[in-house]
Image 1 (tube, helix red, strand yellow):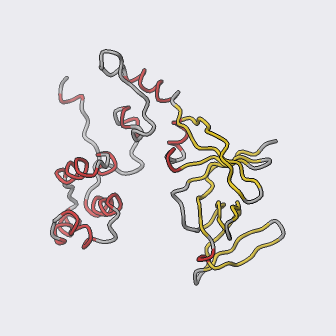
Image 2 (cartoon, one colour):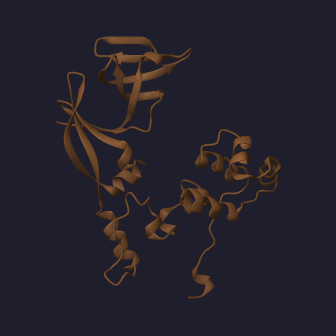
Length: 228
């Protein structure tokens, strides 16, 4: 294979790169990032000013923390078609794509396997304010990727006439429909954050303003399937 067959990627650089480092390592600022990586804070300023990327640091974080290289090096919306199929999703969604001789199948075969892959979600029924486990449901891995969901943090909740996919990673109110724990009762309601630690919850017969400290957010609804 000649070098012409391997393209050059548009890596994150400068501020985009260092901000992504903070995001991927969950550091709130450059001081915390500096302490974590044993890198002077001024180094990040230099990278920002000169639009640089540290490939060594990408490798170090991948080897030390297991963060995928594509998440460290590339923009989040980077076209998946430009990457190897084994990188289209996290290992949580990738099906087995090796044959018995342990060689990768063709890219077309790998894409077909991925398109038919499924993940398993925990399924619940919401009855009288209680979540009751009703087993598991298979979902298309490709659809989960399109919705930017992870199986480990997504559940299916069924009511009398509707099925909801709920992202449990979202545990803070902004605006939308949420699964809420109010005084030990589980409820699905539209809610919106208000100033001064208040939130507005819409009920069937009206709306109410409630202190955010009195409500526990269990997840945000990302997909609704309505029975006809």
